[in-house]
Length: 436
Image (cartoon, rainbow, N blue to C red; front, side):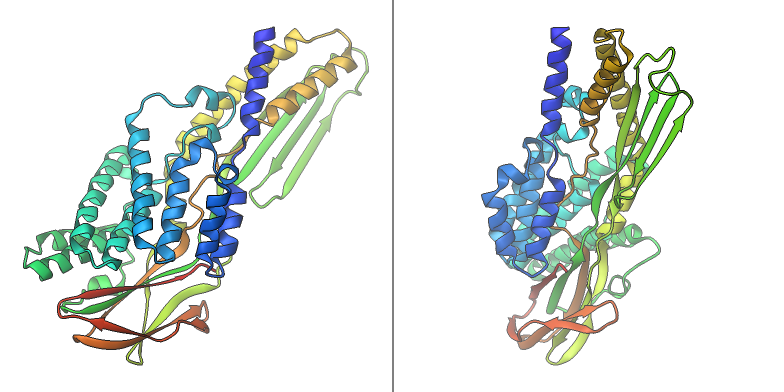
């Protein structure tokens, strides 16, 4: 009995270390939406232990890597994203994890392994970091690493794998620049462009169907809006064998429904005070309202609009759908294990007094119910969409400004005019993060 009570106390303690996913998302989004990326970085650095649990090591490095990228600290971004990639590699090479604890409590105890779309987003950001620094060889090395990661995901996910067209496009652009600069074969670029076309499926960006063949370019990468987040759908039901049934459901938007069915009055003849409760929670994607739609890039006073190359909504939606069966199996196993443990504990605590036993049963149900929490972890610094426009130019100095457009095409703001010097055979990368 002491061992069982101790086991229950340990489970409740583990559950008290709940995932701070919502706190993290809100904190990062608040600063990022106004372009204060350094503020978001400082907040994370000051409050690491509050914002990230021990199993969130990947998310810590991933979030910092993206924020440093937006803040034009490209070398710092490279360092953090390289750590994130190493964490994933270490996790997949290890066979022993926190599976036993998660079966008793919830999936937030497990080390976070990320969604496939996040892994691909990591590598495309890493490629862009090197391109921003003008390090074409470093970008090419990262492009090859990205393909190894994609191949591993293909093997793991099989036919369900949702391959990123934007990652393949950036790989192709990297190999294209490398081939032009050192007169190498352009085969890698052609192959990557073919992969990109297949990955985009029915929707192929115009720039991919009409690939520019110019030596010099100004390439603008825009990050628009806020990514979706995860909230939980929760269901719980309590049944008293003497004739009372509670059914409750709360969706990801906080709306709740309750149904109470009563057959016998509590305390009447034969009232045992026994209850049985089943509770489970699963993650659901919730979109956030974004004002930013795309960007208008003015080079020498000639505007060109960006195109959407990647959507975090589509990536997350597909990955949730692909992982739905696994999530449900894990949830069902957790519910069964926890319900059996709770009912055995109730059997040990029976006093024979219906009302006293009812209180003990309800207390046990509340304690085990506190353990149930869906895994809502996801990168906190992701935008809604990745936007790209490639503008061919002649060698020399060019005037560049960028307008931010809303969903009606209206201008929400503009960057200060800057003058960009483009050398012969060079591609200059500029970035426009507007996460609101």
